[in-house]
Length: 464
Image (cartoon, rainbow, N blue to C red):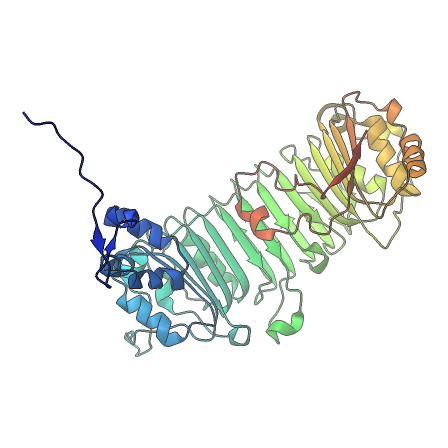
C-alpha cells in the first residue's frame, strides 16, 4: 500500500488570473466566512464582495449586520434589506430622517412593510432612532411584529401610538430614548415582552404619571427630560410608580435633579440597589415610608433587601443620611456625592441612642464620598462612619484639587483613623471624577455587575 501524503494548500486564482498562494482564509467553509463577515461594519462587509469570485456570495448570504446612520440614504438601506439573502442578525439605524419602506400596504392603504417576517425571524438586536428634527414621526407597526429571536431593542426620537401591538417573546433589554408615548403604550409594550429583564426610560414624555408592572423586570433606569422645549406641548413625567415588580432588583433614577418629582414603590420585594436619589425627587414613597426633599417624615416601613444606596448632590447632613440607614437596616454600601458648590448642613438632632445600630454594627461595609474637600461638616460626616461602622472594609474619598504632605497629615488626624471601629477598614483617597456613575446603559442593562456603582474615581493618591 502506498504511503498517504498531504496535499499542498489549494491555489486559487484571482480575477487577475494569478495564483493566490497566500489566500488560506478562502479555504474556510462558507459558514465560517459568513460569521466573520457578519461581524464587520456594513460598508466593510459589502466591500468583501470585491475580493474575488469566491467572496461574492458570502456577504449576501451571511447574517446581516446593518449599521446605518444619516450617511446612508433611504434608497441604499432599502436596497440592502431587499437584496440581502441571508438572515438579519443586527439592524441599527440611527439619525435617519425617514425609515425605508418596501411599499407593502396594510388594509387601510398605509405603507407598513419595510421589515418583513423574514427580516424579523432571526433578528437579535434592533435599534431605530430618528433624526432630531423627526422626533414626532411614528415607527412603522411592522417593527413590532413577531420577532422570536430579538434580545435587545432601542427606539428613539419618535412617537409610539397608544394601540401598539408588540410581540417580542424573548426580548431581554429595552431602551426608549426621547420617545413620546402614553401609559397605554408602555403597558402594551411590557405585556408584549414577557421575558424583559431591563428597561431604560431615557428623557421620554407624554404622560405625567408613569406606572410600571412587570413579573420579569430586574432593572429599571430612568432619566427625566432635560430640555422641556425638546417636545413642545408634551407633558413631562412627574411621577413614577412601581406598582407590581416582584423580581425588581435595581431602581435607578439616573438624573434625579430633573425628576421625577415623585417616586412611589408599592411592591418590589427583591429591591437591592436604589439610586441616585437627590433633591430633585421631592417625594419618595417606599410603601408606607415617606421622604420629602431627602428628609424622612415617616419611617414605618423597613426595606431589608436593599444593599446599595446612592445619594446624589447631597448636602442635607448626617442625620438625613442616618434616616436612610434606618429605612435600609441591611445596607452594605453607601455612595454619597456631595455638592461641589455647597457646604454640608450637618446640624445634629439625634443622640447616640437613635443611631441605626443594626446597619452600623452588622452590615455597612463600604462608604464612598465622591466629592470631598476635607473641611468643616464634611469631616464630621466622614469621621462618624470611621468611628461607628464596626464591619467597615473600605472608605473612599474623591478629592478635589491637589494637596501637599501637610494637608495629608492634617486630614489623617481629623478623621481619627487610628480610632476606627473596624480595624480592617481601609481609607482610600482618590482623585475626583465627574465621569463616575455616568454610563446609564451599563448601569441599567449590565446585570452581571453585582454593584454597578462600584467603580474607581480615576487614579488613587494614597491608601491609609
